[in-house]
Length: 124
Image 1 (cartoon, rainbow, N blue to C red):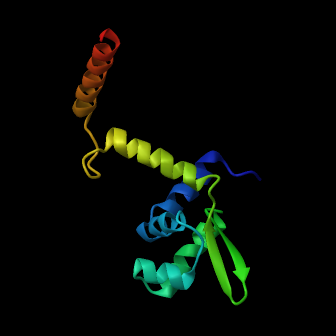
Image 2 (cartoon, one colour):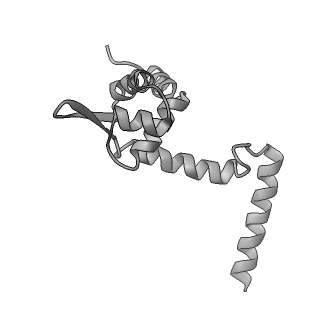
């Protein structure tokens, strides 16, 4: 039986809703790493990193490749890099104050200013 989009989204976002997993994904944007490198960089126990790599691997957010005795983890750039771009865009547009999201009133004010700037630029 095919899983519904609701179930898929739930698993997708629940996998991402973990600070350690997000830190791993962000780190792997810089290039492939083994568990030891990840744990040292993030200053966390290897067992904690391994525990958090499993769901990332199960969802194909990261890929593991054997290299001699170690496993090298790399980011699924096709999809996860796009997510980071979307998050960065959203954060810049709607959460410009260090993670504090704008209220409806803040958004309206921002849109008025942007419209005024566009109007000013097109007239000059």
